[in-house]
Image (tube, rainbow, N blue to C red; front, side):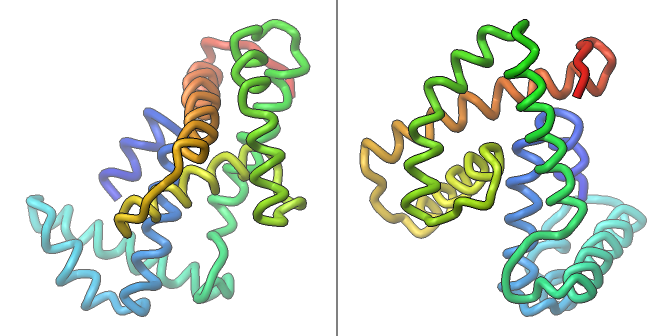
Length: 182
């Protein structure tokens, strides 16, 4: 909860990836708050009232995941909504004609996005979701200590660069420091 709040304020793409990881942790611990408390929550060096707040946050996520029917796979609807909003923001940056650096970063990533879509046969997802899924897949592979080819690393680097800049612009927009119609 503490990390999620920090990431949501500082980098929206990192927040999404973090929340996907939390969803997977909840699944790995079989939606059991006692196991989550023992293995995760108890590791936080926080006052008791904050620990209770963190535990309630996990309980809320568990309840939402059960209610939304994503016990096996999928993402919480509020996270999916953020991804979709971020993709709309991405499209607005591209069509505005005022964000050359972003257009350049997208040009560098576009072929890799299309390749990833083809390899995963994931044609229904938007470009930003594809980039996020690519980064998340690499995160999982690294956690499993799997080898990642130079080509894959290079491709995912273009996703990372695109999402980093997109997150910076999104933060500016959220603060009112960037005008954009979308």
